[in-house]
Amino acid sequence: MDRQIKKLGIALVVCFGLLFAQVNYIQFFGAERLNERPDNTREQTREFARPRGQILAADGSVLAFSVEERSQFRYRRIYPEGALFGPVTGYYSAILGATGVERSYGNELSGTTPELRFGNLSDLFVDRENVGNVHLTLRRDVQQIATELLGDREGSVVALDPRTGAVDAMVSFPSYDPNPLSSNDTEATDIKTVLDADPENPLLFRAYQDIFFPGSTFKVVTASTAVEAGIVTQDSPDYPVQSGFDVDFTDQDLRNFGGSSCGGTLFEILRESCNWSFAQMGVDLGPERMIAGAEAYGFNAEPPVDLPAPATSQFPTEFPDDEGNGPLARASIGQGDVSASPLQMALVTAGIVNGGSVPTPHVMDRVTDEEGEVVSTFAPSEWTRATSAETADVIRRGMVEVAQPGGTAEGLQIPGLEVGGKTGTAQLGTDPPRSHAWILGFAGPPGQPPEVAVAVIVEGQDGASEQTGGRVAAPIARAVMEAVLAARGGQ
Image 1: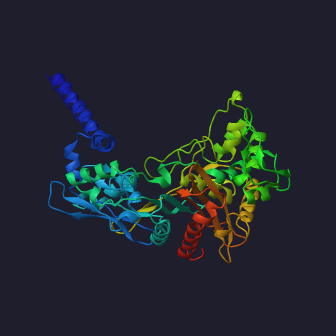
Image 2 (image 1 turned 180 degrees about the horizontal axis):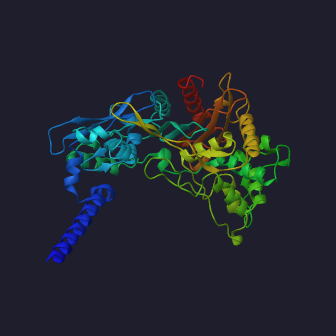
Image 3 (image 1 turned 90 degrees about the horizontal axis):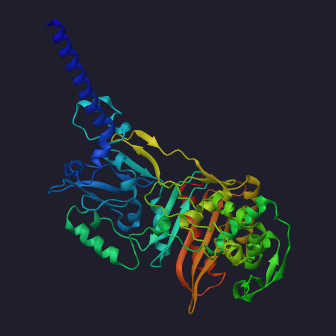
């Protein structure tokens, strides 16, 4: 009898142990998976029955907070800045789910990360909502200036710190107000249906979720690849002055803008944005080196930005011999099958002025608890090594020349600062002539590493000349760079 009782006791202990282990597994390892199931309406109701942390700009401006309302879902999100930060913050709705920072940092905002759940042991024994507040790197004043200057023209502005990848401003037009979309009733669905049907697609955050022909801004990648490969230096070769590049299997040259003639050494052809010279440079490099050079800057890879669904910028990975030199020549000047997001081109600029190191882009600076204590920060890191520091310095100095008086990017000039840039005009058609106006830029105190890198695209501009980017986009880029440096206090 004692033996049977002993066996029964052991069996009960084992069963209790298994049950305890299963409960703990679900609590600590399976809870997140169960909570994220779309059919878990109990979790959805519970989630909206408690407040969520704030989202704040770098200057402390509140971009998102929770308010209590009388409904099945107790709390609703409010976005005081509306469309100014809408695509960045995204929206959070019981009906539509979450986008933007609300999605990327949902666990932090709801207080379900280990640091917030178990950071203070005393909170385990009291009824306290330990939500997290997400502090962004974006600056409200810079965001406002970029938005005002872009106006009602379709396009995007991205400004970031090339040393860390911290995003200072990220703007697109058209934008949207997230407040109606955060409604916890059918109003949100109705508004989203209208926005989805809008042909201008305001819910698409063009700054990092869309890709465009980069045009001549891509020439800095071709130049960097050629210098790194050793086939081009600052002083050689001296490309002859001519009006176009001979394309195989056709009697139509790849011509310079307006049929003009140009040539010269690296800085001279950068300054004039000489199509035929860069086409020749890319063909001299060959497909393998051009592909490797583009991918070293982040093309054909999803950028690791801490926002949902970033677009992958594209550079062709095949150049069939039977198509001749045309596809590679066009790709080398940012035409053909090359496409890039504004974020990608800002990162290209950052890589050039950051010694060849492309930083990991990010919009989150830190997370704090309800008492203001920092529980996590974003640690800057390298995304990709684009080129050597020596090569990067050559291209940086070349871009400084482009922004000098008489260069296509002279509109970037800021008194007392070292400024560089590269314009681009991506032609969309000839009847009537229309193009995307691009500019890349950077600025900082002379003799010091640049402190801001920027990419601006203004879509669908009338006309098509190499001056379009400098005329249309340069004033936006210059003002944004000035605002960033002023906000940092010249740090």
